[in-house]
Amino acid sequence: MNRRSNAQGGIVIISGPSGVGKSTICRKLVERLDNAYLSVSVTTRLKSDREVDGKDYRFVSEEEFRRRIDKGLLLEHAEVFGNMYGTPADKVEEALEAGKTVILEIDVQGGKQVKARFHDAVMIFILPPSARVLAERLNNRGRDDGEVAELRLDGASGEIAAAWQQYKHMVINDDLHQAVDECVQIIENAKSNS
Image 1: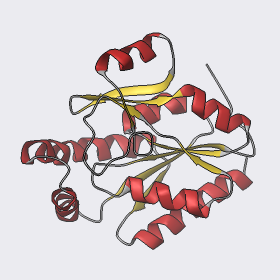
Image 2 (image 1 turned 60 degrees about the vertical axis):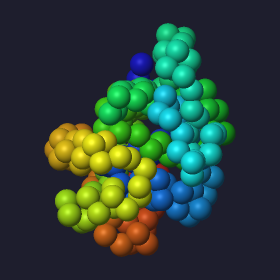
Image 3 (image 1 turned 135 degrees about the horizontal axis):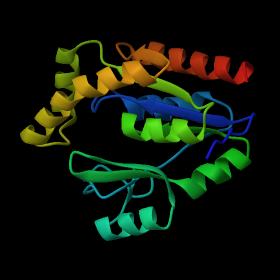
């Protein structure tokens, strides 16, 4: 299905390895951009104590997730580190029809799926300043046990390599304010050129 998203709005894909600061950047983008909508992904991952259902993710059972896949209710979906993640298609469609800029915080697999449907989607990959800094961020956030954190770190290099093939824009998150500024400029330039 070849779709072109709404000219006033459109889709922005934000991807990057775990711990790089994607969620923070996405929240800042919603504050800075006019008429922006941050999509909330559905996941089978267990909710942490700090997360809010419906705000951080929509937490569902694996059975419910698979039902959504079977009914075509997800714009994209992928299995990452043993958990399923996906983007609710209906919410994205509603936001696009309202002329909003839809921000999707998804992995490289999901980004590729969305780009296949929305050719004019803006794809931004967030890079860490170094592998050492990424490891520190993963350890400091305290969300994963040591084994899962190690898997996430190991997967980062493969994800970064894949992103160089698929993503037009790469932004290093060394300074949050500067990274957000760069993302805003990329999005605004894409809007003015569409």
